[in-house]
Length: 37
Image (cartoon, rainbow, N blue to C red; front, side):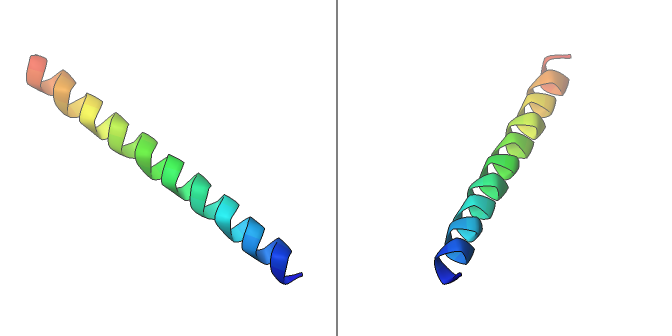
């Protein structure tokens, strides 16, 4: 049980990091887009 919880926690952490990264990338693209206008 504990191993499953640790694995799901690391999966959730990885998903969270990838979501945060994609949000940052989108925000950066938005800034660049507005800067180019």
